[in-house]
Structures are given as C-alpha cells and as structure tokens.
Image (cartoon, rainbow, N blue to C red):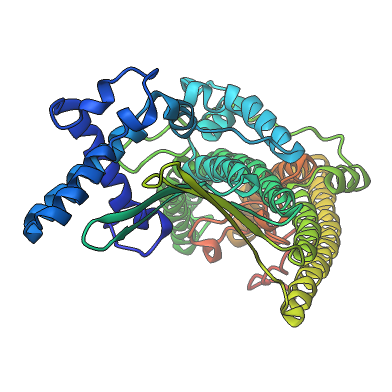
Length: 563
C-alpha cells in the first residue's frame, strides 16, 4: 500500500508544535552556548534570586528606562530572557516532571483486554510465531488431507487478513480504555518586553465509568473479530476440501468414461464383424462409431475441466498465479460418517462461529447501552500554570466541568444502543433458524446420497452388467438388435457415472456437516446443491448425471421406448 499524503489538520497536537519547537531551540541553545546561559552552570545551593535568569531581564528593563533601546534590540533582549527562562526550566528540579513525560505511563487493563491478549498469545504461538509465517508443510501427491488443510490455514491471505483485523481490534481496547494524553500549555504576555511567562500542564478526565464502558464495547467488538477469524479458517478448510473432492471425482468420471469407451470399441468391432458376415447392417457400425465419437468428446471435455478445478484448488491453498500448481492428491480421505443431524445441530449451536460472532455483537450492544448511560456523567479538565516571571513564582490552578444538559441527545443515545441490541438479538435468532434448516437439508442430502450409493453398488450396477452380457449374446445370436445392445451399454455408463456422483455428493455433504459441527458459518456452504460443481461437458450427448436415481431429473425416453 502506498503511504497516504500528509495533511495539515487543526488538532491539539498540531497546536503544540510551536511550543515544542521553542523548547527544542532552548535545549540546543543551552547545550551549545555556555556564554549565553551562564546561570545553568551555577550550583543549586545558591539563592534563587542570585541564580535567576530573570536578573538580566530586570537589568534590561532598568537600562530601557534610563536609555530606551531600538525595537530590534528589545526583541533580542526579550529572546535572551526567554532563553534564560528555558535554561531555568532545565534545572535539576524539573527532571522528575521531564522524566515522567519522556517515560510515560501505563494504564490498567480491563478483564476483556486480558482475555483477548491471552487468546492472541495462544493463537500467535502456532499461527504466527514471533510475528512471522511458520514453515509450510511440503505437499506431495501422497500427502494427507490434513497437510493440505494446514498449508491453506497458514498461507491463505483471507485467513491472514482476518487474523490481523482481530489483532488490530485487540489493540483498540487499550486505546479506548486509556485516559487522554496530558497537554502542555504555554502563555506569554508581551508588551515592550516579556511581562509574564506561564508554562503549565492540563489533563482531561472523562466522566466516572466512561473509559471502562468504552473498553467493554471495544472488547466485545474484538471478540467478534476473533470468531470471524475462526470462521475464516473453517471457510478456508471447506474450500480446500471441496476442491480436493472435485479433483478426485473428476478423475473417477474420466476413468469410468474411458472404461466405457473401451467397451464401446469392442461393441463397434463386434458390429463390424457381424456386418462382414452379413448378420448386421452398416447402420450398426455407424451407430457404434457415433457413440464412440460422443464419448471421446466427453472425455476431452472432462480432461479440459481439470484446469479450472486445479485453479480453484490452488486458490484454496493461497497460492499466487505465478506460483507452481500444487500436486493433486491420489488418495481419498473420507470424512467421519458417524454424524447424525441431531448431533451436528447440537454441536453447531454450541460452537458455530457465526453464532458466536452474533452473540458477541449482542454483548457489545449491552456494553454500548452502559456507555450511553455514562454520557450523563460530566467530564472534567484540571490544570496548573506557573508565572515564572514573578518572584516568588505565582501558580494558577484551573479546571473545567462539562454540563450534559441536552437530555434529548442523551435519551437518543440510550435508545439507539437499545435498538442495536434488539437488532442483534433478532439477527442471532434468525441465524439459529437458518442453521437448523441448513443442517436438516445437508443431512437429507447425505442420507439420499447414501441410499443411492447403496442401490447402485448392490443392485443396479451388477444387474446392468449382467443385462449387457445377455444383450451381447443375443446380438451375436441375432435375437437382439444393435440399438438395444448400445442402449444397455449407455445405461451401464449412466449407472457408473451415477455411482461416482453419489460418492461425490456423499463425501462433500459429509465434509460440510463436519465443518458446520466444528463451527463453520452456514453461509459458506450452498443451501441445496449438487455435491460438486459439474464441469462444462456434453452431458446431453449420452451421459447422465444422476438421471436414473431418486431425486434426479427424469431421463428422456429412447426412440424405441414405449413401442
């Protein structure tokens, strides 16, 4: 990021610049000009009047009364007097105050700040030890899914951004609960000479309990940022697992299509042999070649779809476009299958990061209500100034008190905070309802995929393979035409692809349920969608994506169906 241009603003700090510049000039002059500041070297046990830098001022006034000086000489004389005063301010007796201003003070941390910093130490120990990114695990095609998840957690920019947003919110707690900075004041009266010189200090004190209430509000916001960071970590894990399953089952679909292409090639050879002996027509051969061409195009489309899926997987791991592509895992690691909808919902209600974030928002609103009531407490300012031109020195203490008179304003602040709390409670209730709906839908998709997978593996696929062998024998015997033979082959292809889709839907839905139980925000998972995004392929060219299964679209009848 480019640095923002400096701007001139009318702030208290900007108002102190001339004063601090004058003080710095005084220190430099005192350090490098022993002739002009002889009084600084005097021992402290001498009388103040004898060592006072104002002795020269009184002499100049006497000389002025006896023999008036030109204006430029008077200005020089006043500057010499101011230099002497600055030297006096550097006296050893001022060292405690200067030391206090230079060293500074430290406030008392509130409970929410202590808890937030404890969480920062725990998380930073493994996420950013010593403030830097730890060594990433080496990824290979044999790496486990946990290695890919760890890599993404440590390398994903979105997770890192959420982490530093949380750290910034923790530091804001200290800012909000701290007293305002003290202010140095300076006043000087000048007629023909300096008649009064009054440095001082001023401190503002917010009303009783305001700083603690403001710190509680910042602590609530920081807690919400912490759960947002945890949610970003789980979303990153979901993106990795989704791309992981997409790549694996893409290879499975390519494998199934290649097996069927080999089967179709053998059927084409069979039709050609039958045509040569006069038992089949050339139409059978052409039909086999057409089906081969469509299946080859399907395989080409599937292989081409590997590129965008690899890009998704690469992005999920937090890799830049100019970095090499990650290895594709060869082994499938299934999520635990002992989850029930009741168990997932119970765990999600207790641990879901989005719900925790909203609960923190409600607590922040409660702290904001307390802060709004504290607005009725007046603020005070206390200060003291010393006229060092007077002998003895004259001290001028002073103070101010704010008057919170605008009752409609105070009532509006309280009403706004109460409305914010009610809005937060309503959002929390709505999110709990949405979570229950999402868990119910995901549990249904998981059960549906499991039933379809069992049906395909135990009944449909074995029987369809048997049906294909019977159709092949009947074709050789002349009892079955080539259309019914290829239809049996196409049905076997559809069932094989349906089996892959059912496995993909089951695994991804199971992964989503596991992450929701761990606390993943429900907005990260699609409410009701196929288990994996389909690549752009020729689905209507002979393949079927679940069309033969319950819950899928009804397949179009073949030309001979219904005859």
